[in-house]
Image (tube, rainbow, N blue to C red; front, side):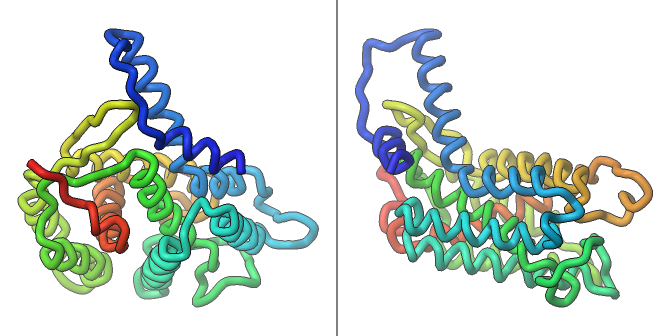
Length: 281
């Protein structure tokens, strides 16, 4: 109930024309930070569990299994508390499935892009089931931010083009191991497709805007930072981190940014989002 009350306050129409200068900046920046923190609720709680659950597990329960239980409890609580709708939950489940399929492929014996070194009862094809929730956390953030910031998109590209780009992004994560890596060609097409697109958001009482492409890059950057923290805590390892931890290659930033585009496309096709995605000129 407290979070629902906070949500209602955050999205309530406000008008404070008397605010100006540095005072307005502080108020808007503070409200922006509060909304961002609230949008990161699932991701924040989940990664807090990552940091707090010992690698050896608790009470004889392996860490990966505990993280799965915690993720399910968080997700269930958010739906029961009406912080997420059932339609949004369906989209998040899709993120989980898409992410888990990618994890299975990337950790397979022929590829081994990274690995999950610890034992777990809830491993399937060598991948712990909780891993899909790391992708679902990105989807949850975008869904929550869309509502809290009253997001609207100006000059959104045709939906079929956006879907084609999203499918190509996902497919390239698989095919580049056997064929040419078309990442930068896809990124170039993506840049052209979204070049005129801007996201309109409301941190406090006035609409602000920024290029949508910049938004993709920023979210990708913060996911890359979270990935560095997660590998530092040995949640998973890249091959170059087996002997001692080292920073995740900055090239992963581009991969995460592309994955954000795919996630954004799924969210944008939710009925209540799609109905108001465009704004008048």
